Length: 79
Image (cartoon, rainbow, N blue to C red; front, side, top):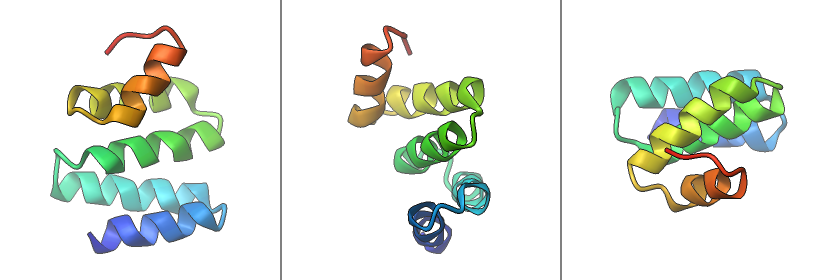
């Protein structure tokens, strides 16, 4: 969870590259950390990596992440 916390701090500071790296490290340590997929998706969106972001949102949605499911519904995308 240390990587996740640092990723959140990077994200809040607008450092989306480092945030994405820390969220990726979090996922490497725990493949079912749905919040990390969602936050990595937000970081990728901020970097203009929309296709990659959608993949993260879909994975988080499959794990039951409500905000990801809502975001995908809003965009009329399935998961």
